[in-house]
Length: 308
Image (cartoon, rainbow, N blue to C red; front, side):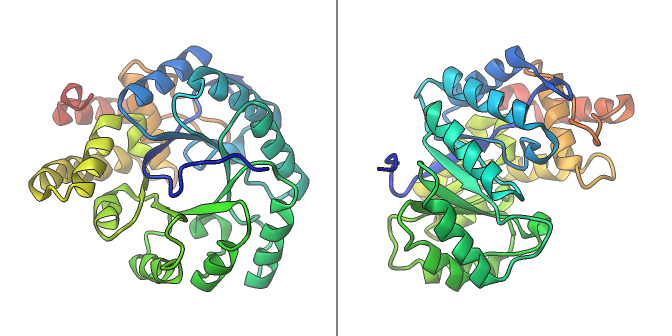
């Protein structure tokens, strides 16, 4: 019997960064502060071991420790979602079992990466893995990293598999959103959330259930307030808050010329704010002093204390 979640799950789910001291040590104090910061900001759930959590760069030992610590610190206050993405089927199952043992509420899975799957293979894979794992599962569509997208018709078929409860899409492809919404039109209890925070409000206004927004690590209240304003169709408030969201994505996420600039920017900002370490798991590195000074100035220009 799989664990029950609100159906559909709604709101802002924060994809937590993984605070690190070094490649194999979690910054536990920083992690506690980060979780308390986001929960006090009103987030509706916590997601660990996603893209923002650098899951692909950290060891299985660290992933398991992170699951244990997250469930212990959160202590049932909000739902905990755990990323189990891996190119190895047994390792994904092992992480799902670890999540269940520690009291997590659901798991999140991208298509296996490296060799590109066909849609039929993807559907068979999901059916097989759902027979092996003890928690509800969210799909995670991240074609930029996995080289494959869940086709809308595949999402519809997967939504019929018992235990698959939702999808988070990070494609930033508006036509795709519409096609998936149409495919799911008869599945009112199936959660549909988006990753790109710049379009979260428009998505909720169009009937989506919320966002899995990395900026909520820094400013959870901002994203929660924008979500609430969108649900209430308070267009004046939406306009005011959306400007801040766009300012953040146009500045903090754009420092440096790296594919990892978004994550480096978020981690650096959290470090400047005194919340947690900004160490990045190798092969990446944290921002050096020139970039850090830019982040400090951006936070000052944002009057970031007013956003907390």
